[in-house]
Image 1: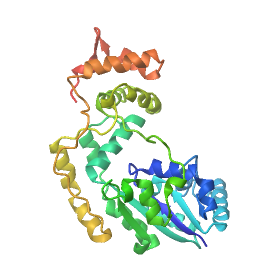
Image 2: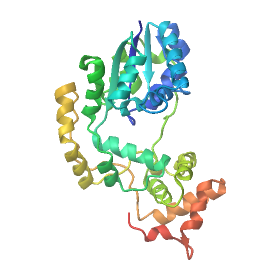
Image 3: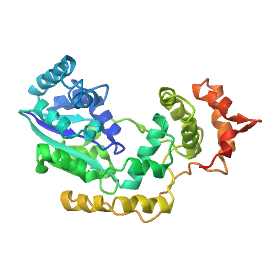
Image 4: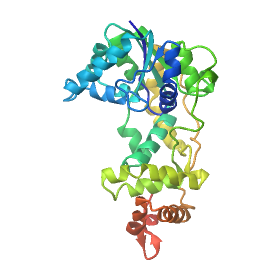
Length: 334
């Protein structure tokens, strides 16, 4: 029987850094008695396992049964194991039960990281604008994606037991060593100096912000879903043009107050049930404005000029938005 630490997210809480660490060090970890199973995992994370165990046509097909069998075979030779996918946290109760059944006979402990709500939603919004066809304003996104975080933890506690669910705050001040990998290692009992393992020397999943984010948001309105999503790597490359194109997104005080009020009950429940204290944000969220109207025309020219020079597909947006020599998007409201 293996002791399995099931890392379920949330998204935008350093999940890529954790998954990179465990996948890059899988052999070294195995030598120390830790297994990061290959079965059910893509290059770095157990997204395929999570998605196949959700209720639906894939849940009981032959490929899923084969994946679960391979995972159980791999786990049979382990004393301690880690499974990680932020997709796990999106499961409904029936999906969580399927995961429990797939891991039957093992001791499972669930680890969930949560984040202050404004920072969480802003980062999630930035990722979705960059990597999908999302085109709505940030406050609309907050309304339509409302998700009390304590209910995520509760759902897993109902299946695995409340005492088997650990909830941690993703905040540098709260993380051991100010680092998600060190914190998770502490939680699961992976001891010693982590310097013995390799780490990526750069951020795994950089956030795009500022006028580049706004340009992508506008572009998303005029391209098919798959095509808009296909620009993600180009946008990431273009974010290197200006420091204002990378990092956090500015959120004004009114929107901060709106989000903070929306999640007042969630903060209270997380503190009461799991001992996780999230202080309500009292000021604007500092970052680059998206849009920054004073710089939008210049930034449009910079982005599209570089996109044309590099042969990026997103450069075709310049033809759609050019009107008498000026970007037509400048006539729109943020």
